Image (cartoon, rainbow, N blue to C red; front, side, top):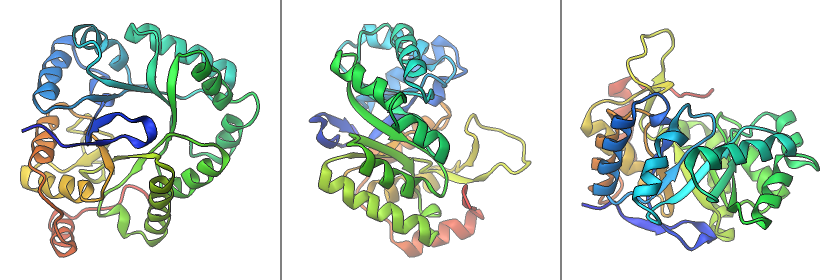
Length: 286
């Protein structure tokens, strides 16, 4: 069953509520990537989220974009903080994906206060993004980030510039942090008022690896069982208009897509608390 769609902020695009997270393609073969494409198409996923720092991900989707022209809303991200560096990084991304423009270009992981000020000041990456938009190289501009401060930081970013999208962590355990929850909820309301798209990550995060052997491609230890993934995905999807970026591990991707395709409503907090207790979940950010 196709995953439901929603309007992606002010862009006018009807995006699948699960967005394919390109980090999953960073270190896989082209064959594995192409098999993932077939899975995405089967579930109606029509939005790709890449980054210049995701290994070979941008290269891996080049054949997808040639084969399925016009099917995907295409997003990528840049890590450079100066205008000169950002321009070079954007052109490299366009070359690697074999396209002449992207729909959304995002300032990636903009959390550090010094980097934040550099990127959003004259001569910073935002200047290059605005220039690229005027040149037709990008259509929309977003900002992303991680950490316990990022919801508050995104609120500051929206006061500084009219970003078209934000991206940040969102799951039940993270939202038990009162500071994070307060700022996430305030950010969400601002985004709803201004028609800014809200993208979320880490929906099936369980805990930091914390010295445990890494058995998945994700930088955090994820939930593994379908029933647990179902609850976590449904909980995140229950907030209207929120988009989920899928997991950074191709082996878990089918479970996330399957859960999203069966979304029928929110599990209550008692169920989610029981899940957190049973799996010994820990927050990724303190």
